[in-house]
Image (cartoon, rainbow, N blue to C red):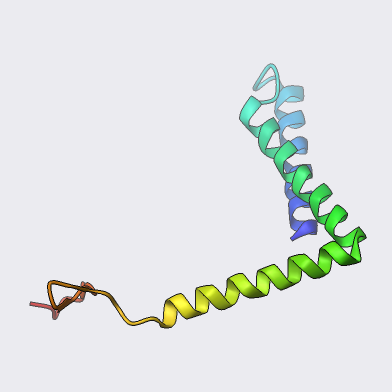
Length: 95
């Protein structure tokens, strides 16, 4: 994830610089600069987490807990509305 974020940030910067150099735009598009900065923030955050073993352990435990909760939610039975199954059958065979 870190490498992907870094490569995407670099790609955005290269493309924006190219368009400015070619004269297609006068300055980098602000929302693209913000996106690049956000991605670089993700890279720095991952660096910070990876540099602290205690924090890394806490993050891994929290991610595992969230994954377990999501799995449990997916395995839960469908809720009913007025005594009928609330799942929607959008197949062509449904009446």
